[in-house]
Amino acid sequence: MAATGPLPASAASTCNTSFASYQTIREGSTGAQARAMECLLRKAGRSTSVNGSFSAADASQLARYRASIGLKPLRIAGRLPWAALLSRGNTPTLERGDRGSDVLRLQRSLRALGWTRVPLNGSYDSLTVSAVKAAQQQRHLSQTGRATPALWRGLQTGKIAGPAAPRKAAARPASSSDKGAKALAFAKKQLGDSHRYGATGPSSWDCSGLTGGAWKFAGVTIPRTSQAQWRSGKKISKSDLKPGDLVFFYRGISHVAIYAGNGNVIHASRPGKPVSYLKMSYMPYQGARRPA
Image 1 (cartoon, rainbow, N blue to C red):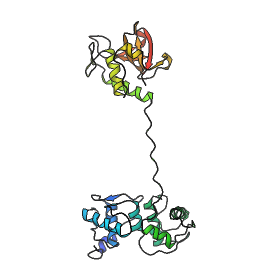
Image 2: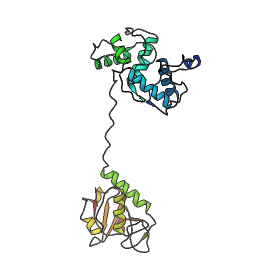
Image 3: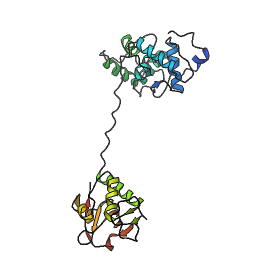
């Protein structure tokens, strides 16, 4: 459907299409960039509103515009529709040192494709040359850095994809120190809870129930009893203790606590005593393990 009338002068006068980056526009988008997309579509002959609220009708017009230049008729505007609309018009040959509205039109289109270092100042500078060469490479054109009609046609028909989006760094697997810190944080939240033999929470604990609950919170399942916990994990020397490590006391490994740093542990000691801090030196130390 063609536009029902010319773009109102009031709308044209406030149609800003220069942005630091260009957002994806879809049905429901609002604001200055939604208005810019509406304005560009209207100038391209589509029957859109120009009010900064991208409606379902606007999205339908966008899909028709996309189809008209050979793109899939999607109701969403990413890099390619932005670049195509921003570069619409004549196809002059431009080179370094040129100035004016055609240069600015080119720069907006390149910026929309992801060449974000390109200035929007209408001056064909070295950064513009670099982006043009990269775009020419994508279109298998001679990399002269001059904007030619062939380059313009590539921009206007969505045939230049722009630079690859930066890859997100892979999430770093949680380290043993991260997990130990989480286990200790859990234990700290139980300070003041009561002791009860065989209890595993949520408000009462025995010694190994507390350590098991703490490490479960950190994403690691450990055995239920202090003796079984002693037989699992990595043996740690006293000098290498880190927060969250399991510390064992008494002959027969009858007690276990969570190392809290500075020679202290958090433990569930015996009935009548709440979960609390204690100096390691107050109990007969037997060894330590790190579950992960």
